[in-house]
Length: 233
Figure 1 (cartoon, rainbow, N blue to C red):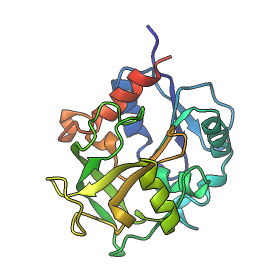
Figure 2 (tube, rainbow, N blue to C red; figure 1 turned 90 degrees about the horizontal axis):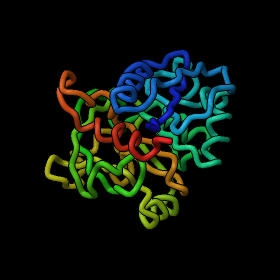
Figure 3 (cartoon, one colour; figure 1 turned 30 degrees about the horizontal axis):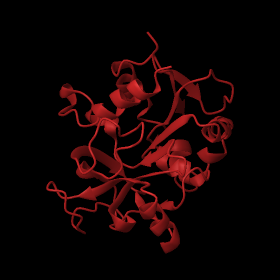
């Protein structure tokens, strides 16, 4: 039986790479390949994950240094050929810094690190990342970031809306989009976006941190199981 093959890019300062590895393996895919940031030569895979953490210590700007690593140049090339790529938290910052996703991630509006569960509304369910969710579904996923404030110019934000490329939005538990439900000040309560070809997803919340009962919930599991089903090849 065909199974999804995946790779997880590991940087100095990554701290969620093993969490993602466990979630991917539990989803029914093959054991993920762990790729060191300096290695651009890794096997062909169906999915690449750029995990959370503090790549290069975030010493310059979150994700800015990682965006220029040999591994990320290869990730960008493969994304251009249609390989699925997901960047989570610091991974989202890296994808924005290397131009795979529009916009930028700035300091949280409150200028504080925020670590807690949030509620998300699934806005786009027609992607390999979200196929096991329903449009409008409310899920609980943890966040842990200091630079999660998504910004983009108005033309870009309008294009994301019009093209259905906003994947997740911060809401109340009942699905209302409010300022109080927005943990970082992101424009339009955006928690995750897609590229134009819909094979690249960046999101600040951590689905791998709520992917099994032992972690306190399973709302994140559907993402990894959906990917495994969609990309098995």
